[in-house]
Length: 316
Ligand SMILES: [Zn+2]
Image (cartoon, rainbow, N blue to C red):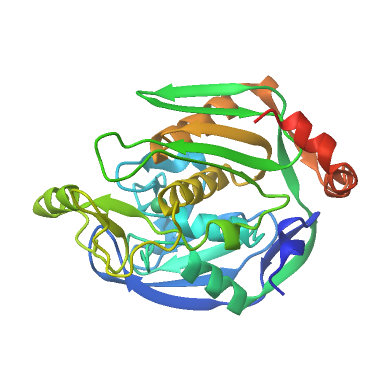
């Protein structure tokens, strides 16, 4: 069953069966078929391109494979084979507590679906979750690490759980400043973030499409913002859908660590570039993290017994 237990599991998980969906790619506008398959312990999340030679087709979902962060997160293997827009699927896998899966696709992009993680969460729920016998390692943050990129800032610090404090700013646009905090020991990814859609400005979409980019982008798979308002007929799914989507992106991008993180992130004006930069800075400082086997440190139970103390330590 899909529930909180897989998310907090002390053992690794995978899917209980295979599930398929198809949709268009944001960049190409072409139809892509995606199938999620179960995988053995310690596989992590791997993408397999069915449209390239088999010996070059595997692209591991790993932060060091991130090759482009302009319109989404693209990962590339040692043969130059890429998979684009992995972040919404990665976020759904993280939220559902899935550690190991093989995602096959017959094109270069994960389908954009409705621009959120909800269709992937649904797909994973259909497959079900299987607990494996191997223990799950957690990446424990031991000290504060910060990165900056232009006006974007991201900081990660020790925290007993995983929390995100996020602020977005788009001065001079119809998007107001939005700020939110999420603590995933008490909030579920599915309910708080999974339905939040990606967004773009109408003027940018036109420019990108004139350059042959974002060909699949439309009101069906993104919130499109005009000069003063949201152009989608149905409006927004949440009053603060923009910041929720940026939080979703952070979750997906951070899962490219291939591990569940025990730490708290504070970020202003996040984007795929700085999300990756934060992971690179964290892993580069060997004194800033350690791997903890959940079998040895049952921190979930500890936190449930002392929720106030844990939150007081967060210093968000
Ligand atoms: Zn996104």
